[in-house]
Image: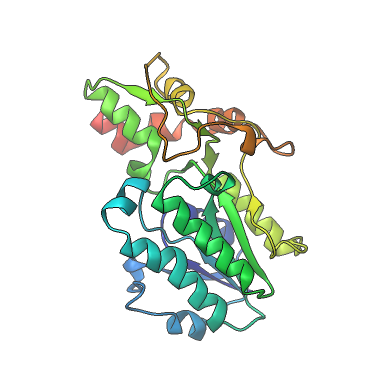
Amino acid sequence: MRHAILGNGNLGNAIAKKLVARNIDFHVFSTMSGWKYPASGIQEICDYCPDHVWCTVGAGSVEQAVANYAPFADLHVRLPMELVQGLNDRVSLHFFSTDYCCVQPQSLYALSKLNMEQLVIMAHRPKTYVYRVGSLYGNHKLRNTFPYKLKVNAAAGKQISLPTNCISPTPVDWLADILINMSDCDTYGDRSSTPLLIHPKGCCTVKEWGELILQKNVGTREPDTSRPLDCTHLDLNEAPTWKELWLERKHWFINYPALKAEL
């Protein structure tokens, strides 16, 4: 088995660590390794002859999509379709969407992910899977995570107020375990025809998670209309709760040396 991981962010790095632990061959295609889409194309990926391709590369945030949509069109739509149409059908393709798509898209970011879902599904390619995830956190690129940014802002004395939008905080190491177990056991079934929502059980508001991170009350801000407003679409039964998983991992944001130095 050979795995190609596109992107070296928190999720891509978590998948790589799980593969290392299982002594499975993989290669990370990222700007750090000299691969940058669309300039690099997909030929290098094809030449690697992978059995699985994990497309974890991201384009940025909801706000960045408004400022410059081109990278989102390239990475959320063009790259997935080039992989779908360019790789041998024996290769399993894994794409990551957002739980924002569980409701009517309210942003260019969510719309680009929904377009990806629809195009990939319409292609009817075998062994092609789309996962809806959200509110990811991990300790590889800690400075890019919500808990880190929140702690730094609070330590700088900034007034903290957070919206009541719904989220389900998801640790990437837990998510990677689920994904690799599924790929090992071939338990995907006929999931290539519909996106699969993967996240912990239950949900909270951004404000509630922020107060748990800071261990104090914060101000309330009006909901962000570009993001999901309620939790009904995140009601899953078979998983640990988001809070259990956070409490197991919060030491990342307490003991991490760089964070302690900044605080």
